[in-house]
Structures are given as C-alpha cells and as structure tokens.
Length: 191
Image 1 (cartoon, one colour):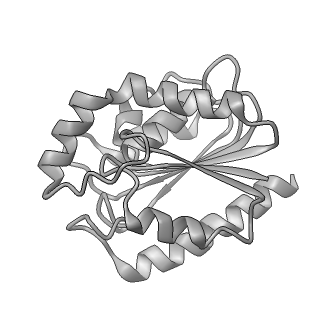
Image 2 (tube, rainbow, N blue to C red):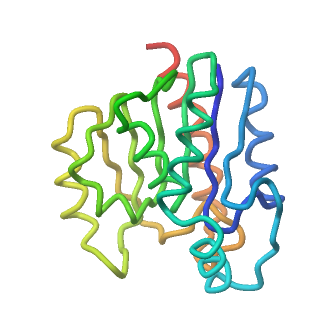
Image 3 (cartoon, rainbow, N blue to C red):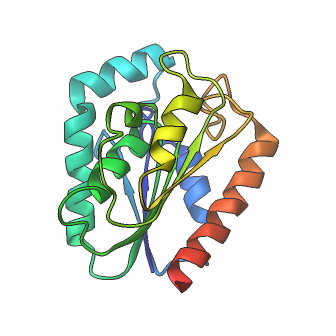
C-alpha cells in the first residue's frame, strides 16, 4: 500500500514527520505532499503561514501537486489530507482520473465547502471540526453526506486539532484520531 499525506499550510514540519512515522508499519511507501517542496519554513504564526501558502502555492496548485503524486503512484493508494491539504485531496480524488487512489481521509478541509458539487471516485472520510468561522459545518456535512462515496464525521474539536503548531491542537484527540486513521486505512485497503 502507498499512503500520500498532504499537509496543512504549515508544510512539512517535524510533527508531520512524527505523524508519518506512526504509519511506517502500515504502508510500503509513504509520500508527503506539501506547499513548499519539502522545506520547513518554520512560520512564526498561522497568519504568516497562510500568506506564504497563498503566495507560493494556493489551492489550485496544491491540488495539482496531489494529482501529480497520485499519477506517479504505481500501487493502490490512500490519501490523508489536513486543512488545505484536505481540500487538495478532495479535488484530486474527484478528478476524472483518480489514478491508483483507493480511498481518502480529509481532516477539517474548510475549502471543501466550495466543492460540494464534486464527485469523488473513491470512498472519502471527511472529518470536520464542529465549528468553522466561515461556514455552517452541519449544513455542509449534510450536503456532502448525500454524495456517493462521502462519509462525514463532525468532531467536538476545533480546526487544527491534529497539528501541534495550531492553537487548537488537542493531544488526546490527536492520539485517538491517529489510531482511527490507521484503522480506516486498513479497512479501505482490505476492501
């Protein structure tokens, strides 16, 4: 199995490497896709990270990077994306050719609210925060739930709860959902 991890706007930080190491026994091949070509910009704030993400990559380019990684994969692939990375994953697995994609997991992909008319070609687990400042999570989740291949979950945690750099990081939730991801990947690959 191949796993493609797609980062948040913070890029490939040491916490991403630590998270990926948790899955070393799950996959033969793990790829990390980030907005900064593998560099850790070590942003001082989320505001700075977002500004650089917009300047250096942006949503369309990030989705293309994920699609390219998927086209280059030669084995069954599961994708896991966080925040902007979740939107990029949703876009990539909804493209006419999802390549070797077998399934995807998207965490707090707020940009997905603008892509509710997309049609994922593989099963996608969408994990949302219970509250987002720019949209009504429950309304978006209800709309997405009607899409074949989409399964929505709303957590009681805030956007960024899986990222230690976020003010909303939640340690217990991180460990719970990390194991949940591993279980979901195993289930998707077995089907």
